[in-house]
Amino acid sequence: MQMSAEEPMTVLKTERAVVAEATVSVASTEPDGRSDPLRGWQSIGRAGGNGKPSRARLDDLLLGGKDHQVIDRTVAAELKKVAPAIRRSVRARRDFIERAVQFLARAHQVRDVLVLGAGLPTGPALHGLAQAFQPSVRAVYVDDDPMVLTHLRARLSCPPPGRIAVVPGHLGQPKELLAASPVQALLEPGRPVALVVESALEFMPDEQDPHGCLAAVLEVLPAGSWVVLAHATADFTPKAWEKVAAVFARHRLPIHPRSVEEVAGFLEGLMLSAPGLTTVNRWPRLVDQLTPAEVSRYGAVGRTLGAR
Image (tube, rainbow, N blue to C red; front, side, top):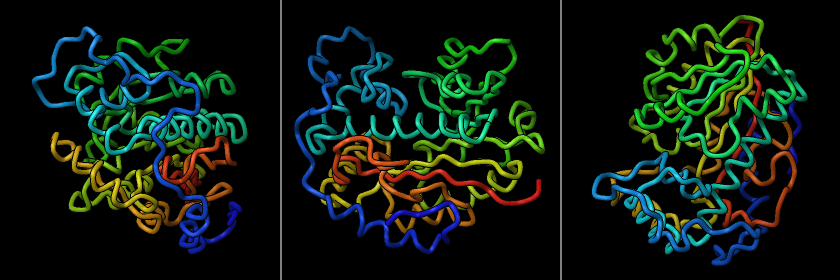
């Protein structure tokens, strides 16, 4: 089912039936032609590995980056063993985020970007993608990992100076996050913001009230702002995701995949850009031949209502 930007949120409940039609087992090959960063990982000469793995470093590894340690490679190898398509899933998520940010800058002239759970700067910076269409773009990157903050501050730039800020914070503490001066400066009435939530929600348990935390941020966004949201799901491969979740839990990185109905709850009250809530590789249209089982991530782009 295709969803126009004006259709009600209740339509989202049928999305699982649509994408499930193409569901197959998780593949074990790399058909997209990209090199596999897990091959030959033992030869990567990085220190570390006796401590706790990092979500940001693990993401960096799965995206083909170099800012990771032995322990992260160990976790990645375990994940690939139980979910051979894990790298393609993470890449599909990132590609969706990049397409969405470019779309908002090009089609809706969005010039301000707020990234929650920014992670390491692997690949093109989101503000750089937006700047190709909106030269005056401003961006604030938020993360709660000191290592990530250090990398972001060292590697992100945007002429002229002063348009990029890196802020410590976490979606689970919206009051403190929103009180940061750079965030306050970005939330200027009359200037819609693109709020990017790439994977922060899937690492928040229900007990942390992710729905309420996100709603608190959405409430203060300028009218007409946009939300770019992605979230892991076990809808298509529940048994495989049990194993994936077990790997994350074993390494003290609990992950919480959610159903299409649960992800739709985060989008309540938003006007969704077509095709609505779908697997990330189907937004705004099918961009590859990955199956829903291989992708295992939902994504949507929605616009806020209100008068701020």
